[in-house]
Amino acid sequence: MNTKTSEALGRMFKHGLKLYVYPMIDEKTGKITTATQVEVAPNLRSLYQYLIDNRHIEEIGDYQKDFLRIYPPAVLDWRLSERFSTNLSTGGPGQTKGRRRKLGRDGAAGSGPDHQRA
Image (tube, rainbow, N blue to C red; front, top):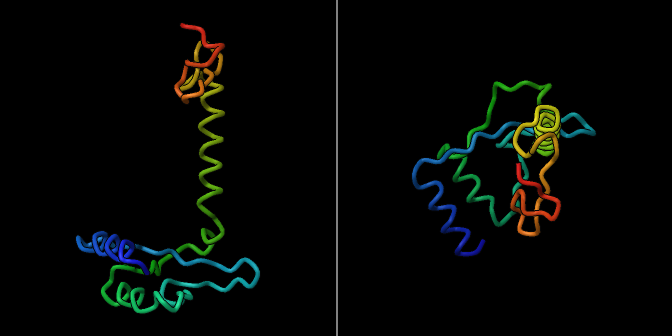
């Protein structure tokens, strides 16, 4: 691990930062792996063990097995699609008189070539 990474980790955990780690499930075998069972690269094992021993990393033991197959990218995709479809149907943010605003090259709303002022 390089010096910058070590320094950044030191700063993060210096003020009591804790990571609460939910178990993960192997989709093929159904085996559940917790924070204390995960395979860690050899050069990071002592650091990882230090974080476990000093309770900077805590396993979540009271978990819902059904939730282990829900993955953050899928939730994010779902939330983004929900927000977009809600905006289209309700005229929420990003809407101007029932039309989607076009983004210009700089990404600013309303700076596209077809933008009409309300």
